[in-house]
Length: 362
Image (tube, rainbow, N blue to C red; front, side, top):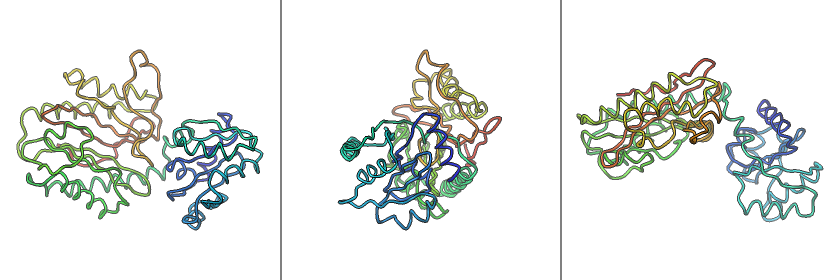
């Protein structure tokens, strides 16, 4: 954690920010190690404070020993009150806050508490998120374990699937398998979508049966130590129709092209194009409506984002970096028939990428 705090302080200095209020749960955990559900950090060049309530005082002391702890008591000593006190104590004139993670009500309370102080509130964006995009060795090790649990669960469950089973039954079987395999929980609500339901990229499992000869998209991930896995496979029980193999082959080839081309320095929109251009050339560009992938870590969706560029901006945008962990998930979705999506997690390495997922593909 000391290294992460040092990197954050360097980022603040580079941006000319004297102090940052960190309120996003994932950012708070990344910088301090604190995993409680309520709290905030105040970071300056010299000071690192953790604010939380009485439920988490002991936990915070264990998880964040390098942070000075201040206890929230509401009513009486709210977070806004404590932040105002600390700002005056530290002689701050400017306090930056995470614009994407503060509600209007929270901003109002903080503004009110700061009214009689010389402190000015100013929004900041993406300070901690940009650090989180490049995973350290410990993060990669945890992600590998989460991926392995996910791979083992789907491998164990698929042989037991039957056409009469409902999507909900299968989702529960997968969740049980991941938890029994060591997962702390699931990364997101599991998707099991059969037949026409699989044309919905974020379908919810229903009482509909899996059926025979229909595409079945499974999208799942184990959560371990706060880190998320993400895996999609498309299967079929019984003999599929000819269209299934046509669509499946296009999607699989698109994913292979993308994985072969991922490397540090590649623009994220160019990574998307590696798969999208192949799908478009096959005549299904309009049926691939989402981006190629997204970063995965303490959040299931984080940077970098592998998506197409706006027209005329193809030469702009972020580039991949060694240490990024991203999903690679092309898909084609045909209303009334179904869809195919194939997703793996990939670690960007010094000269390419390493595919972390190992679950079998058709």
